[in-house]
Image 1 (cartoon, rainbow, N blue to C red):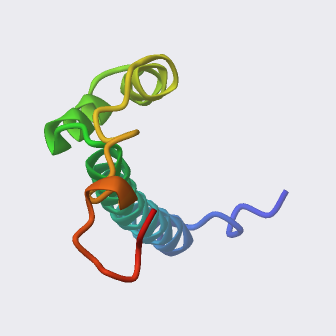
Image 2: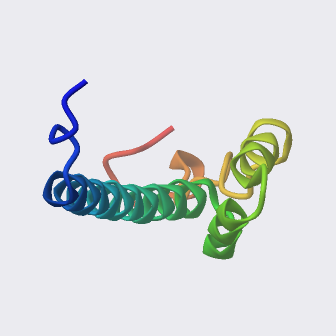
Length: 95
């Protein structure tokens, strides 16, 4: 094996490249986590739950807890229409 293959300069370059790659991966992971958080906020607000439930994502198994709440809980906004045809004052809708 050639002793100059891993000289001090090449080792410093490899360490610097590893640091840059780690920082890029960390940045992309942070961007992905922020996007995931805002998507959960939107989903929870459309389902009628508090937007604060999205902070459960910070806890271990938080996404699993949120999915269980959505799957097995009663949705506050389901079944509540803003205007039913029976109570409408619109003359086009008549019985």
